[in-house]
Length: 356
Image 1: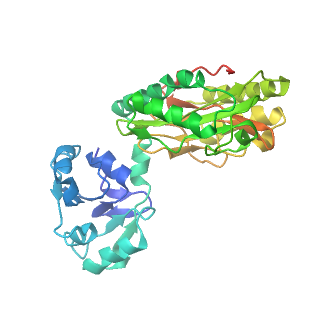
Image 2: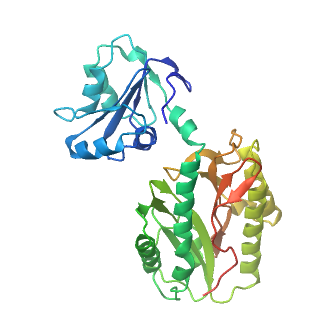
Image 3: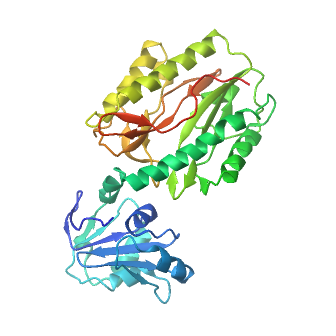
């Protein structure tokens, strides 16, 4: 998957591109280490890393063919890259991911001027937004692994169990099933705390009666999953059933709106319309979804302010919610593939309202 040289989004024509954001490095050359800088020109590609990754880089850097791997003597990747660029080159850097110190280090050792640097942020991310079949298969496996532990974990929940224990049981199950890591910090929030959109697990006990939001994901083959299910402790009352039904209807409406060419804002609007009609519009404070892939938040954004349109091959989440302070909240989230003619929900877990 080679990055296009020449025109980059917002940067004009480039002679070289320095890729420092590690997910982009992995996407382009396969390297998974924690320290790497990829230099791309029209004729070659060079990965700079340190001695810890000598063998690993030799094994992994195959995705762009004859890429060279360079281990600088003192581990100064930016200095080593600067030495390979002519002063007249127009060099793109990922401004959104480069620190001021890294930029200064590069300029200190490059004979060119700062005026010849271009911000090339977003170009590789735009490529990554559309997944190839291999990537879709990797995401599907991660989604299915995460889904496989949901019902067994719910079966272990008991009123009085701390949220931290519930999260730990979930995470242990993910590891037992073969997960390489967590997509993000697991969210388990129960009772009134389920009204927290991103409620980190606390020592608060699961209630005798009330919602429990479980938002989690797993990494498999480098690709992430993301799912949310909301279950109920005890028998739900009429209000709980009404809120849950509204969120489920909103989620289904948004999924039905997913198709190539659909405006991301329109997909968000489909969910928001249902929740607003039910009277809880102000209790839905976040966007309806986001892209997933090598990172948990990728393009496109499924939001009211989004300007993008969907493209076949994109993989997104659909996750509306309602959060009522002092009472509780509900969120339901699936991973969805944009297909040639519509959408495929990849998350197989039931969305029936479950109680324990």
